[in-house]
Length: 152
Length: 409
Image 1: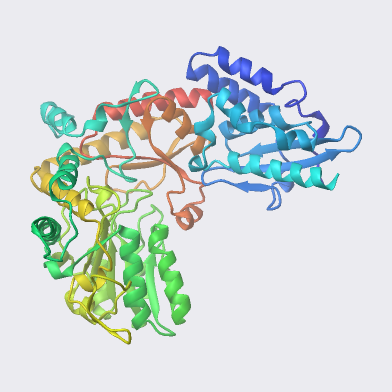
Image 2: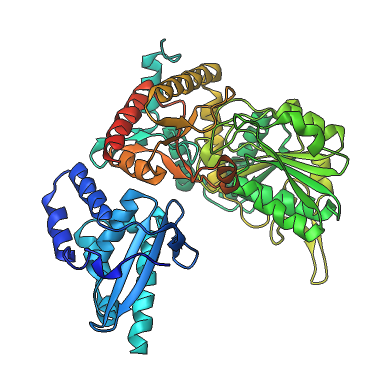
């Protein structure tokens, strides 16, 4: 049984994409940036072990990501939660959720992810060759949003 | 203890590798991913440039002046490889790399001779490239793929060779030096036992040829494969050594131009060795670059380089043992200068990312040895792998960067 409360994830609610862009542009050394990214990851609740299953896994070459998607009928918004076995990948996933969580499916489909990644200079972490599963996670969220958008 | 290579020699050696002067994120580069690929000396880069500036032409056609130069360059490189391995030129086949060499042997030799009930033996330390091709040919032939187990210290358990090398064993394909852990395998003993039952032996020498001399006559193996790019040469070129009597009897792997003697629409006959296994235009510039890499390596004092690498291995092991929470994976005496490790309570990928930010290039993950990582019960490791141009200073930088990473995680 899921014990994850999809309604209370701070990313995309109290922490938005603008907050992330502002914070990361403020830091001038890598240590502050990574401390911030790791701390953001800590805002994500850990998945209970029974939720880390094949249906939720997004396989990376080096680290694993688990993704839970839901939909809130009242607001018409997607609800997202992510966990990873690696701290920095959790942080990167949190950065993605700051942009995409609690948005209507159409807004997720239309969201300029490349522009967002570009503005925070994180493209190198998200390139397919880094193999950390973040890129695959974004694609799965977009696919889910597309499915919801066309079903609506 | 002093480094085995005098500081002035090491500086002169490093100066031959232009990329070592680069920086990463504004910090001087510490390159410790040599098991993935080594850097290239000036002489190799110049040889490739010279080839394209002055020699480039297709080979073996005798059509014109440049064609003769290119053919001489390609075949001259083959002679260098033959001398390097103590083989004859007919036994040296150009490939794209280790993976293609293993595929060639698995499909041509294994595909022709394996039958139901036969066994192929590999070891627990194999790279995916020396597992998957054998799985495929065994499945097709109805043969069984067996795996020599590990001893407690992650070396191969040779005490059980009797169980694994039997009269049913047709092929033994084993890695000389483990890419993931740096463990040197007792291949002399394995080859001797395999030959005693009449099995053919393939040695994956991708991780050994850069570190110490490898002599196929002395080893008495049937096949040996390596990649140019892990041996200070370019990517895209590799070598298969095969015993001539076996190569002569084996069918071609790929067919097309260059590897034929005569072709009609109905049938074809094959060219002589080594061309029978070289369909299409070879990677001429790559072969020339590899030849230059061998020239470079064989004119070094290899005993001094090996002593220096062993000093790096001992120093990095000593530093690792003293580092809080660090667990060496594959802590066994017979190793090249490769340190595979984990930091308690951290994910290898996080450590690797934080080292990278500090200019220290290592590899993290399963190193294309997923079955080995499962046997060891680890998700992957952090691997620092060394070449002769590395220094004790590089190791000090690695541990300073690790201390900082450990504070983050």
